[in-house]
Length: 83
Image (tube, rainbow, N blue to C red; front, side, top):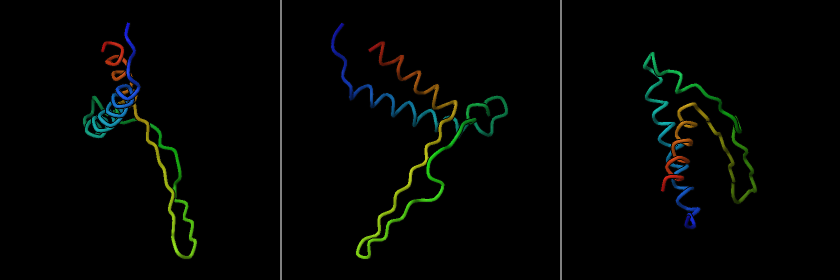
């Protein structure tokens, strides 16, 4: 078994998350598949703003995990194991 590249794993995981979230958003209006959009959001509700007079820095992060994105991550891990 050869050495697997970390960057390929990262790329597959990110694409699984993005595609899973996209599919979850599309399936939200379909009655039989609406469970794919079920999930939880966490992070900063309002951004953190630091005003230094000369520069203003704004920090904000919200992560939304849905069932479809979890399925996308699992599929990405399976594909990585197969490669």
